Amino acid sequence: MEIQDFKSVVDAYKIIFFDAFGVIKSYQGLVPGIEKTFAYLAEQQKEYYIVTNDASRSPQQLAESYHRLGLHAIVPDRIVSSGMLAKEYLDMKVNDGIVAYLGTENSAHYIDSSGLHTLPVSAINYTNIDQVNALVLLDDEGFNWFDDLNKTINILRNRTIPAIVANTDNTYPLSGSNEVAIAIGGLASMIEAIVGKRFIRFGKPDSQLFMFAYDLIRWQQDIKKKDILMVGDTLHTDIIGGNKFGLDTVLVLTGNTLAADAEMRIRSTGIMPTYICEDAVVR
Figure: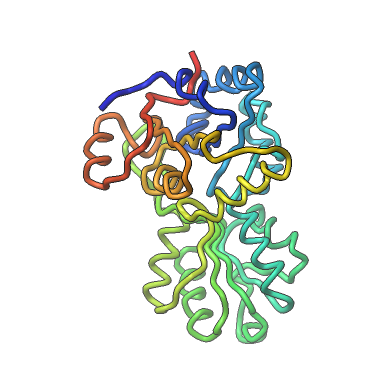
């Protein structure tokens, strides 16, 4: 397994797509030295976007979270979140009634901004269940797992409505260990199996998120897929998603994929990044 220098990789591309968690930051804060990468990209006049499955907060809130850590290069216009696709779907497909959601109030920004009547799953009962016309799974926090997951199952058993998963991640890495925690994508798969229905998923590895970001860029300039590099830490979302969309990809070893088992995971899954780098830091 050949480890390449990140600077030599990014020099060959005009635009860089970064995953967020495990690439730019972790629960311990920013990946050490990552600010040098964004300074270098600005110096070289290379564009960059954060292409993330994080639907827990609005782009403004996500940008502010980086600013609090001292990274001011990431602004809301540079963030493309799977929550944006959930909002777009609701705008087109759901005209009235209640949109119930699992997640925090911050995560509900995307569906609140659609002008629909939004309520947390905990607020759904026999008086209003007939008005629920969509259910959105946004975040793994902000609700009572036992009560609200059971209620979610029964809403979907009783209503023929679309269920939208705004973050397809099954797990996310915990700080300072090899352990992971269940993300909303994992909960969605469990609920989907119980109710026997197929949910609508937005986010990597689905090509729609990459297309959304690609279209944003093409409205501003003439760009080809060969000019874009996707940087991620997870084979099953960032890397296979970028590969399927036709982008070159780089796997970094600072998040879900650790250096000790990266080669084994690549061989066992057959998911091949174009490059492998220790991290996304320009030195």
